[in-house]
Amino acid sequence: MTVIDELRQAVVDGQLKPAVAKVEQGLAEGTEAGRLLTEGLIAAMAQVGQLYEEGEIFVPEMLVAARAMTAALGVLKPHLLEEGVEAAGTVAIGTVQGDLHDIGKNLVAMMLEGSGFEIMDLGVDVPAERFVQAVREGANVVAMSALLTTTMTNMREIIQAITDAGLRDQASIVIGGAPITKTYADEIGADGYATDASGAVRVVREVLAA
Ligand code: B1M
Image 1 (cartoon, protein in one colour):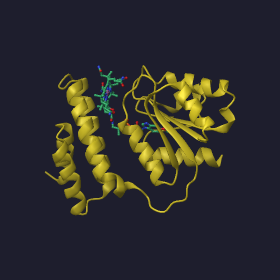
Image 2: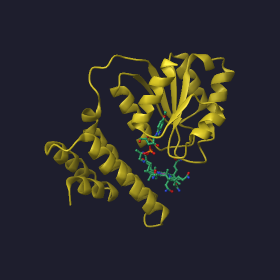
Image 3: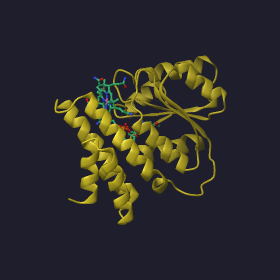
Image 4: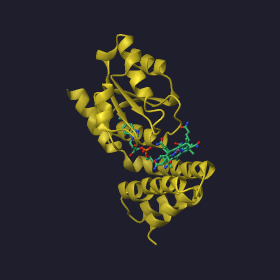
């Protein structure tokens, strides 16, 4: 087993300390941070989702796996960030109301921060009014995350709330999360969407340049 396999297994098993130790070992051995992230941590969460779908594990196991991933990600973070980039805009990011999934949102925030954007992290279960307030506070990009098919519909309401507040021309709106598609982004009037964290950096740059 490679260190990446061991990392993936530690996260799937919800073993926080071994997961952190495997990231440290991988880095010390010269494994690229990006590989530890995609082939280790992100692959582990995909496996966890699969096991949950198959009824092999339940919410508590998903939760401990998520905690192990978050801890391991904390160690990886400084190695993923690009250095020395100028502040390029302020992004208010949050997971929409009713949705508590924050690993992907945190990863996107981390990559944006590392790419020179100022981040207003609104957290999870964020109501429309909080996004509206963030635009009033100076965010020029609103980034929304949703992982549930039942909560992604709230994105439309958030865009409507920003429009109703007369602020739609003050901020670009980008969305993402596992169930989000380009068709859905177009349908609800978002300015862009991304399927992963590096795509999120790209789309935020694009909407700001438009
Ligand atoms: Co939940 N969960 N969960 N869960 N969970 C999913 C999403 C699910 C697909 C699992 C499954 O059935 N296979 C399923 C959703 C089904 C659906 O809606 N179609 C599901 C369910 C059903 C639930 C509950 C309803 C379970 C229950 O209670 N019965 C419940 C809901 C709670 C709630 O939110 N109200 C629930 C709870 C949980 C935990 C709390 C246990 C935990 C979350 C812990 C946490 O986040 N702190 C959890 C987890 C861990 C998952 C899975 C296994 C992993 C999610 C994850 O972290 N992925 C997930 C299965 C899966 O995704 N395969 C699942 C890793 C992360 C890096 O990827 O979040 O996709 P992701 O983010 C990516 C991209 O999507 C994108 O970039 C990120 C980085 O690459 N992206 C953006 C995300 N946001 C973006 C924003 C952008 C751009 C890109 O803005 C521009």
